[in-house]
Image 1 (cartoon, one colour):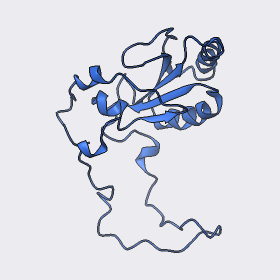
Image 2 (cartoon, helix red, strand yellow):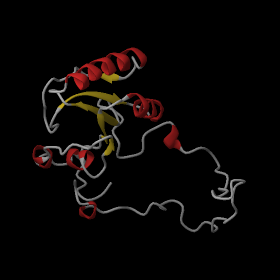
Image 3 (cartoon, rainbow, N blue to C red):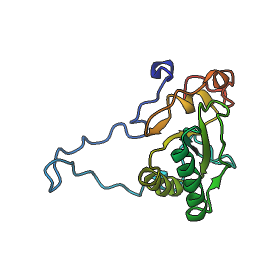
Length: 179
């Protein structure tokens, strides 16, 4: 895993400075806060935020892992692969690899997500339907090492990735410690 302190971060409040303090008023549940109304919904509902890619590669990759020596997991992965292709035909779904490939230490298949709507639909679905399999969800920002480590999301048991090949690739944006 990448050290999160190897990177610089903009303030999460960028663009929201100088506003009135937020109310401490609580919702009916007595726990959550009443939030101020927004002028319009966040654009993050309809488009990925920068620096996520918005091209043919997609904003997110989902790698669904299975232990290739485990007969049950192998069968489950192939059935899940078919189900995803049938239920989500608009997603790009790659072949089921029967061995480790690239930085991935076990067999897997990959699914690409192109919009926040696809992400918001597929990730909850996968959470319920992935069974015993693990999944790595990572953004695509042209910094493959950071995308696969510091910005990665895991469902199930994480696997240690072979990140040496990713470290060798430099970000294509020219930004080393930002974004």
